Image 1: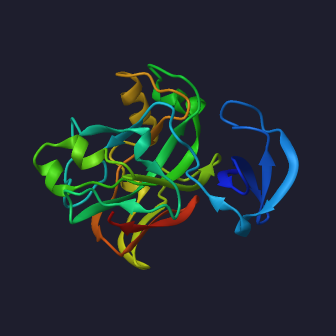
Image 2 (image 1 turned 90 degrees about the vertical axis):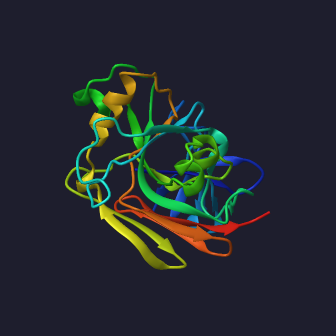
Length: 251
């Protein structure tokens, strides 16, 4: 099932995608039921919003893909937070922070948590996952190299999410394609089969330290970062979910 958050009128709404249309839901299905209003909106007439605004936090993992830059499984990979003010949706502008000429983009599979959870064993992780979406984990390389993680990862608009939530995703461990694009050209490509820590292990590890709340988002890592700058359009894609993009601007 694909669940979108969208605008078609005065207020944001939620809908289930069905045959090119949005079946409008009465309220947020994460906290309520899947009761519908009876209205259907053509998908092409709706403006997609970020499918989830975390009530609490976005938790990011670094160095989680096998590759030349991470030749061995990290024992203590970098973990960081992004505030909910960093989250934007499809086609919303990514605003370059004043201290950066360009930023690094990272296409990632993102996990949406469905209920309050702590100390979740790996075999029970499926019980606390609401669904999956696609994220662009943007960062400022110079700030991160200097150890300034707030400036590097937490600035407003640094976490585009979209295009919707897929509740029935399969094949993550077998390998789903993950791609990033700049102006329509492939900039990076990888597979979730190369995750050092899979979704179950990540969630189990995180909840051994902290409580995750409904709507929290966990970023699983990227197969590679790529640079984007003012005037370009960056897109991210995960097989089985979808693809979306954002323009990069300076204000």
